[in-house]
Image (cartoon, rainbow, N blue to C red; front, side):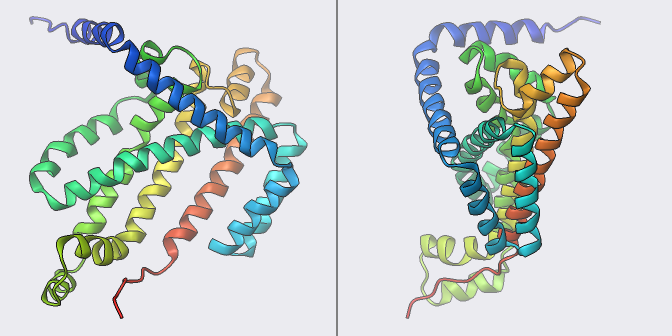
Length: 280
């Protein structure tokens, strides 16, 4: 059977983009690097005991005291094995990727919820983004942005964005029609209907999408250590390359603690009951 050289065409497109769009990629690289470095400086400049206290208070506020106690024990364990700075770098990468995914994904999800045509076009793209093996995203990322944390953030955004897009669209579409009709009967404009009725009612579903995006971001950031993203992923990667089982286990343990902590906190945000905004 005739072989279609898809890989060759992809290489041609990537080479063309790398050559013609270098100024754009350089600008994006500088912006992303500034964001990652800024968040990392903030997280690492705060003494670890104050940061642990802040995270524990947040966990207690949005979840319960058990999660707060777990956060204290887990983060103290990370500090005790000497991986605090690596954990904060990983957290800065996850935070950057999540913010970008939300900035892009929320409008796309809203658009999909309000347009069946947009939904039919964007949904296959999201399927492609989610089912493509994560390692594949690292190749064009390195082409565009060289080695370092920036290609890691770029690949992470692509890999982790689909859940927040899907669940934003799903949450808005699942708002009861009688609520929408009642809002329209009271004279709500399309903008008021979206921001004061649909989004508040869809918030638990949207936050579930945020939870999944954060979890995928963390998993991809660890994988991105292969292209110089550093953080806890680098600790695990070094453990594999040098056959240092203990160091690799410590890095993996820190990843697990961070993942459980982020998961519990974001789940706590999603458990809060939505409130409709009404005029007096």
